[in-house]
Length: 628
Image 1: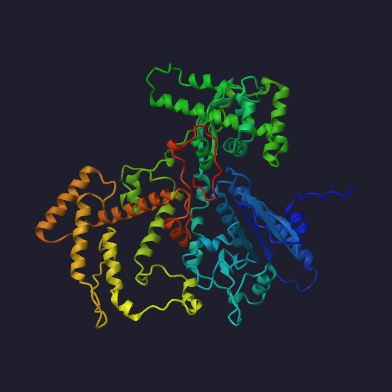
Image 2 (image 1 turned 135 degrees about the vertical axis):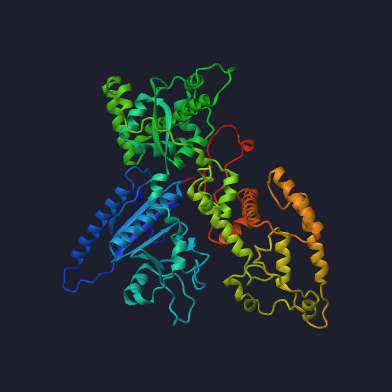
């Protein structure tokens, strides 16, 4: 009988079995490698090389442990190990960050800090999208750099980002570098490496909030859970991540064990205590947002949570108690699903929880902490404000208008969303405005490197008549200015320049620009009168603006409204971008395409209640999910 083929268990075995093919990195994973290019002229190079790598590895893990002492990784934490591959010896690691993209950027931050501590280190980091640092800086990268040739070209060294440029003397089109060629290039020509502060700033833009964001990304919430679970969470608080993921990715088969009333549960809904549980914002949002039909044994618990009959009036305090019971139910069900599959898990934390649970079940309820002992736990009553999940559109308008700095004395103490959402939205609006105000762009729209040679590649294609060109001749700058005014952009947003139409070629038919101007102003006046260019303004404010417009018309001049006008333009632009993206329903469209060209990817929106199937089962989310 032919011997069966053994299935590979590790990444290295998989590559070896398939002949060293370049296998695509799994989705939601970030991979990184650290190389030393130090020469050892006095012999003993291999031994010294290994010793230095081990020193760096220990220092990196200590740094990671120090920075993330109270942090909860979504799936896998930062790790490094010595690797031998293709004649190279280096440090290597892979981390699965799941739905928390911020975990990926935390890994990048740790790597950059390591490069500062050890200037002899050269570090690469990439994910399923390839060189994602260059993707992040795509708006400012040099023209010669493209996704078809950027592999192994971006490196972190001494806290900076360096790029290996193509060989200028080569007569062929540059392609991706092999790892060996990249290291050889760095050794031979370190002075030829490309470093741009502008590119570096864009690539490392998301690192500016670290390390303070490590603490800000945590959320403490009071929940009502069984005493046994409270004890396990106190002993192993990082177990909340795999438990939430089990609940978030639950399926009908796994739910059978907790939906049947006769099931023997590890955490039955009894002997409840109310304690504070530490989540990350992503984990808490995943629990909070899930619609879930309570198991039979939990329905009575939820009804008793507020201690009132269903017909009684529910107060804000009652709603808070109900929320604590619901979050506690979801968390308990997640732990139930997790320990049921603990024997098949590769997670060290899950295995430790399983062993701890076995000890508790063997020792009996007497081994669990009493109420007095629970009260002595650190932060046992801490309950953080969850308003970071809400968006205040008034605050959104101020943030986009840049007026927060001058309004520090305001009674408003928070902005819209979290810091990450605020930074991303400002970045989107800023890039869109730069895009619209690009004086170099013509009527053909944005131009890209790939299009520069299109006319040469077409060969003997279409022949456009010069007579036809003259028939449709118009001034591009004037046309662009008029279009921006129709879109609602003020003269300030168009840099306050009134461009006079240029004379066209003799013999051609000219547009009557004065008539177009009058028509445009009439359209704009009509739209403003009906509020079409002032989205979501309060009725009172809209009436004031309308009265101001009428008064200005009588005086024969139109005045701009200053800073408030700028805020409304930004607010409307941001709102239109987000609504247009949502209207694409997850498919390709103009907004996602333009944002992609700017190096920005928006997360998919949550399903509306009206489109829910009512079952509350989660759907697989894309990589770039917000919520950190």
